[in-house]
Image (cartoon, rainbow, N blue to C red; front, side):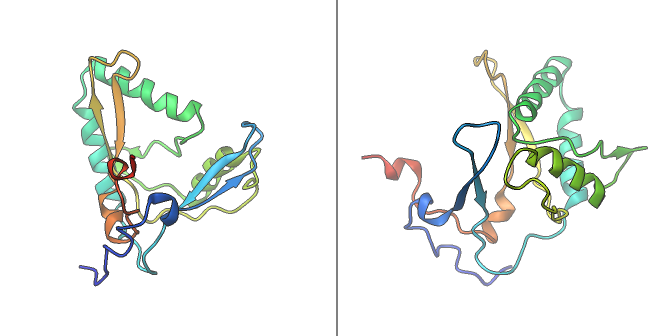
Length: 169
């Protein structure tokens, strides 16, 4: 367990905790927000590729054909909007292999094309964010929502303080 005061910034609104900047992006008129993780100190989350890959694969295996189609549409929407990219198919002969540096760099080059980050070198991931799906049949426009599980980061990053309900007047 970390010996860190995770309540350090609990009384600050998120905009005072998050490290953000606007970067040039040829695809958007005002640019794109780039938010950096507000680390508490130099410690970082542990390597967890196999755990994250297994959780992701298990959640996809459980899907019905209709749910699988909704999941693929939700993922495609993220990709089409430039929020993420498929780095590689990690299932190699029933084993999950992490992406290589070159695969990560190729994905980064695609994601940053036309931005002020174009041509920069990517840092190969060490910690991977697991995800799962939430299905809402009563939401015709978004029947599937992909949820990223950042709970591990709560031990390493400032939380951002006040909740949205506390910020309302």
